[in-house]
Length: 351
Image (cartoon, rainbow, N blue to C red; front, side):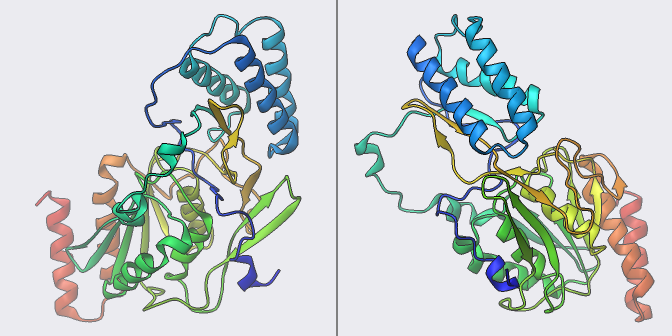
């Protein structure tokens, strides 16, 4: 596969990749009672989905054995609440597989009157495609608070505009402490702004259900300017998950960024769509995983280890001081260098 074509995924529009957050949160839906028939249908749907493509087949076999044994023993018979059934299945499956992406959702099919409703503003657009804030810190250090990696087709124009603006700064901090993941092709596009035009092999996606690996490279062509020479620092923490971990891990392994904070959530698996198990339930069953082309592994269940370990509440302060120290080392303008030193001293003293 060519570098260009590797960026064009041929899967359906519902491609989700890294979507499910570690907490398994879902929209509030009024609970409903469920029958034994509904429970049986959900279990059979889970078994079929896991057997058909769960990314780690050996672990999937163990999960299937648990579901069949629990069903046969009557372990689910007393559960009459749809939401409690989804929560129990999610908890048990994650305990067995250690996979924070694997989840069951109480998610009734929308009625025709609901599906016909339209929004005046698309939800991703309302949240600026994950780009929460850009700020200039003392010493001309740029700060980007990035909360998610949006669909590349939808968010590319916004990403291009804001990422190009980072080129004005002498050092850059990207905050992923509240980033729960998203779309891997957007990860590669964001990374493109921090490398020269020559494509760099960033990450791979292995799909077990297709037995194929898709390479993702940085883009040769981006809109606007790149920040390929400035020091780059990435902030992470326990809530950094999935595609956000892929960005941090990939940039760390390529020696392009210094990762600061606490160990991340540990989710390197991915999937395409929520699978409908019954009219009331869906499931997210990962069928793929990220594989780093340098280490030949990923961060599943272990997280990304920072280069500089510090509590998440102090991560930005430490990153800012680290950026200023890097700038002092490379600055040739003595007046500006003196100003950087003063800023570093004052920030260190809490001023």
